[in-house]
Image 1 (tube, rainbow, N blue to C red):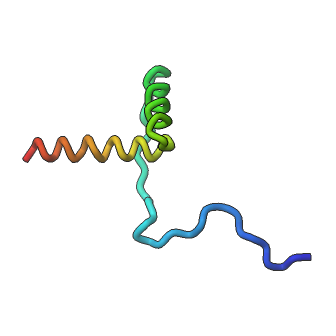
Image 2 (image 1 turned 120 degrees about the vertical axis):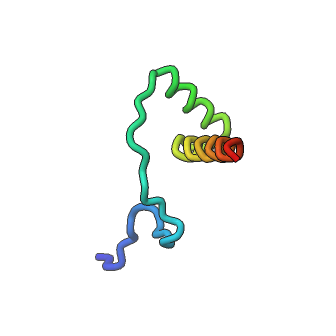
Image 3 (image 1 turned 90 degrees about the vertical axis):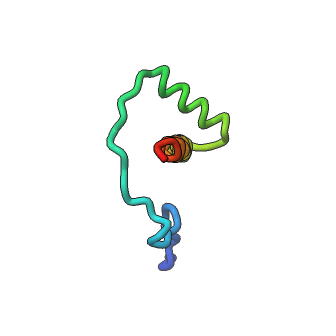
Length: 67
């Protein structure tokens, strides 16, 4: 029997690479979720990356406008 089993799951990340905060649940209409998923797929991203990238881009635009 093997004693050195391969660990399951994603590899460990460095502390500065870990995302530890979460947004609360956002309620959507079916059409909204569908369009988000379609947009993410068209950009070759998963849902989480697409939402994060989109929110970050909008935050930068908003803060730039604010001055």
